[in-house]
Image (tube, rainbow, N blue to C red; front, side, top):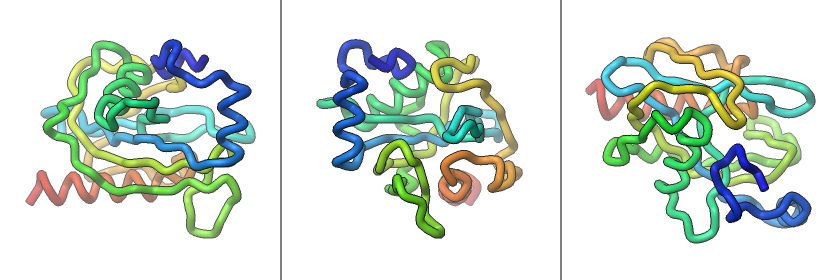
Length: 172
């Protein structure tokens, strides 16, 4: 059971999960959390692979019979703490992204699994406290994101597209 995901007994046992990951893509959600009323957004710092660390969106796997929005809310709670809530009405679809197990030029890469992520930007409220897979939580001005090399799993590309989408809808 992956307790850091707040999935409880709904999580697949590790051996079964590895078997599934070796055979089929895994559905995930990701969120670029925009901190309500501040002009800032946040990213978690987490372990990636090969002993690396990087900045990342908040997210993870979707459970059986869990809606995408419920998955976003669960992962925000598991990663940023129970005091943080998502303004569901603010969620904006950024896109659908695929992370390949085998590195491909110009593509997103996660050697642990082939994942397909439905990615959102949305407003969050409350005091964040890094938990679960998050080692820390960093905030940035909406117009001043960190450099692409700061991100894990190649997520800089996704974060930049999420920021562009958010600004398009909220700064126009």
